[in-house]
Structures are given as structure tokens and as C-alpha cells.
Length: 127
Image (cartoon, rainbow, N blue to C red):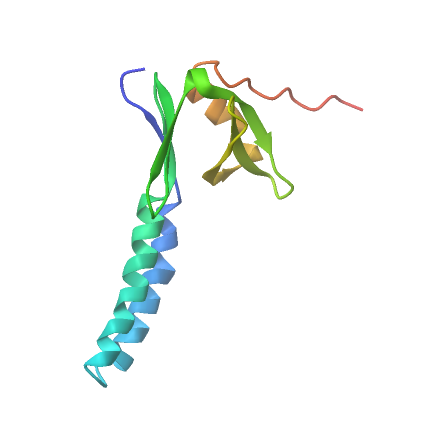
């Protein structure tokens, strides 16, 4: 795999952030201290743009607003589906790392991006 597969939040999530920032400008114009309120939509926009993970030949790199964590394929024990269909990487050391911006319905795409290192879930049996 030449370039890593990137899984990020949908960029349309930036539209409400933009509307919120526009709404705050009237309040921010009232006072010099109120300008600090514009930091809120800036941080939320940064969170939307940065949050996600990359799948490459060596590892899965999970990125959050605060930092990132790289889980090499040798340290990956599996993937756990949480109660709300969120996905967690389970490492051989027993720790878990949440995969942001995806749900259980995204497992086939993640399995494909991993090159078979993460098994693709079987389709449900017909009743």
C-alpha cells in the first residue's frame, strides 16, 4: 500500500461550526474580551479536521485533538465492537484504543484498507 488509507470525520460537520462562528461574531464585537469566544469554534473545527486514523503497511495511527497513538500490526490483537457500535483496537498488551469517526458498519472498509490484517465481518445469515 503506497499511501495510507485515511478515515476522518465528515467535513460537512464544519458547516454548523461555521454557522456558530458567524453567530458569535455579533457577540464578540460587543467587547474585546468576548473575542475569546471565537476560540470555541476554532477548537471544534480543529477537532473535526484532525480526528481520525490512518491505516498503512506498518501500523494504525489514531489521531485525536490532543495527540496521536501508533499501534503496529504486531501489537494488534483484534478489534472490539462496543455497546454503541463504536470500534476499539485491542492490543496484545491488553490496552484498548478507540477508533474515532467510524462505527461497526465501517468494518468492511477498514478490513479492506488493512490488507486482510483485520478480518472482514461475515454477512448475516439469511433466516
